[in-house]
Amino acid sequence: AQSVAQPEDQVNVAEGNPLTVKCTYSVSGNPYLFWYVQYPNRGLQFLLKYITGDNLVKGSYGFEAEFNKSQTSFHLKKPSALVSDSALYFCAVRDNYGGSQGNLIFGKGTKLSVKP
Amino acid sequence: SAVISQKPSRDICQRGTSLTIQCQVDSQVTMMFWYRQQPGQSLTLIATANQGSEATYESGFVIDKFPISRPNLTFSTLTVSNMSPEDSSIYLCSALQGGQGYYGYTFGSGTRLTVV
Image 1 (cartoon, each protein chain N blue to C red):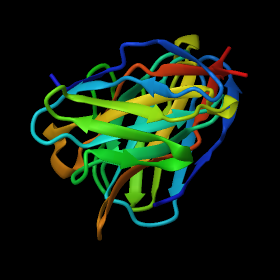
Image 2 (cartoon, rainbow over the protein chains, first blue to last red):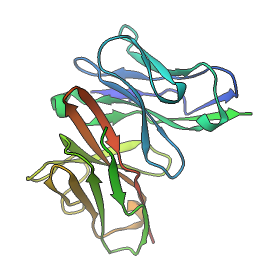
Image 3 (spheres, rainbow over the protein chains, first blue to last red):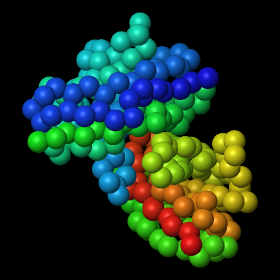
Image 4 (cartoon, rainbow over the protein chains, first blue to last red):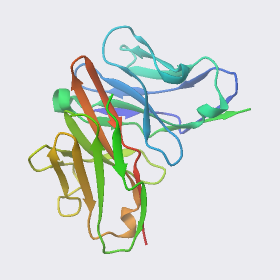
């Protein structure tokens, strides 16, 4: 079955330190991978995606993610965390059984807390 | 990327009643999806809204409870019928754009439903 795993329910980081939010996936065929952020009482905001090309993907707000095919991972990173980065982060993979029109399958989410 | 206007943003409803949620996209999109996010949980796909035909429902979701319409390529509605407190969740619509050099999923801001 296709799935996404986010092994950490919560990640705590001090402001200014680097952060990593982990994601691994299982999918048939080529993975289409996405990261979204959700602030309280808000919808999902797109951060970045990997479809093809360079394994290191840069996205919004200084975030980046590295696609690692051998480890089936797509970890989200930021060199220097801000308090305003505190939010709920979701990793998602396209359901390839739907082909190019497939829906997204989401991980359970990781709460990021950045302390001053 | 597309922009989705989702209404209402929140509502408090009496059990046994129904609520219709609307999503309007500012451009034609390939696919539209409806998700439910229960408190503290990830996003679960309810159904794929098919333009001009019946929606495709995921296991555990049925048309009588969650009727969906998609009359054209930019608009969809989800109705939560005969509501009970267990239906209290955030409901989100999503649109897939897959063509003309861009591939991505956009989300509405969500509808926070409380059933009392």
